[in-house]
Length: 516
Image 1: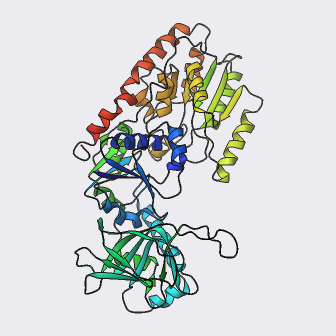
Image 2 (image 1 turned 180 degrees about the vertical axis):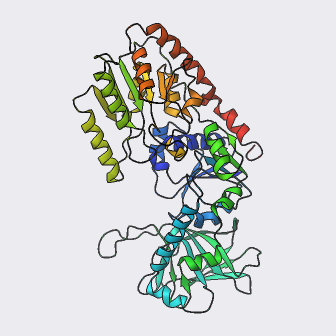
Image 3 (image 1 turned 30 degrees about the horizontal axis):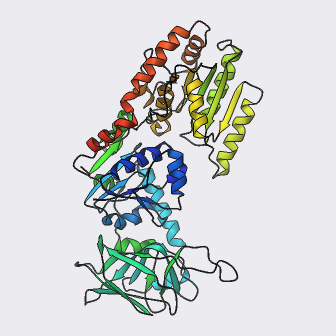
């Protein structure tokens, strides 16, 4: 079985990518798995960072365009798996699955937003396309994805992966005019998941189409990258495939033309088309039913309990640990709130003077807002016993887990849980990793966290500052060691049900009827 796994965010190296990558690793034991991105990914670095094995997988890079335009590409797989948050791809494969970390909102407001974006796109049509749109004929060639801007001389380069709607001739073929003497390294042409025969001459690609009654067929054209001189006046940093001669044809890429050959579907229709929705927690399943009115199958994330292990010989140090990426936005890990609460608890005498707070995580540096978030956090913590340790190697992360006494997680603290559930922790992989190493968790009493932590049994939950301060005061008391030992053993035992070693069996069960 050929399986395609689509994720637009591989380069974030987050918990979702770890989850999806582990599913891919397991499925690749029995199937041909292709990992799909929309931007270059250093797959070797990703494997090393997430401690995964993609040696049996292939990779491909789809055009970086809105999800809905990529739907035809899914037809090339027996099973298409979408693990991208907010994606609106309607699968055209025989079987399909959506891995849902949390269901995005389907509201009239989001629909209005999409309409406004479409209007803006229409106003950006080139003068050439405007002139063409005045023509009463149906568009002949429509660029759906992977086409660069029309050049002033009316030639257009395609990416090495491109989707183009082609007019069907009476002979059941389609022809693409090529720019004279331009590169043409076509590797494969696929339509409706069927690989087509084609012939290339100096000025034309002739394609034999599979059976169908449509006036246009959407072709996926894959090319070997053109070797363009990267220096001098003709340098070009794009990944170029073939070059089309648009002087004598009706070539369009405007949204109006795309909708004629690829009619839009509503987000809920796209979601309902999946064979199965896979959720990561009971919290996520409940919101899938609430927002999408769809059923889902739960598959909790895998925890590497072999790497994150409890070493009873290692002494516990007097510090509270929190692990989470440093980024701004609604789903951030509330580092600022934790730092301010820690400072306040020390002033109130809830925490002994020799205790520290340690914040560990990867920094997001792709936007200034994330850099400002990190800088502001540093200012708040300056002068206090708070350590910020960014981008630690894995071995040092494990060392912190194995020597910390308390693990603290507060994502969603202070948020309106019913109005903004996406700002909560949908499961809590770092909490489980910490518990596997024997840390005693103190976590917010909401969402996925309360599925993991049983208050008073394997850790504590808190709803507000007062409850938090009460728990921290109890656990940092010099006489708390017997209670801490009981909680850390229970914490370790309780997360073994999520062990990565058992994840293969859980994946097979979740994908029963799809891949097994």
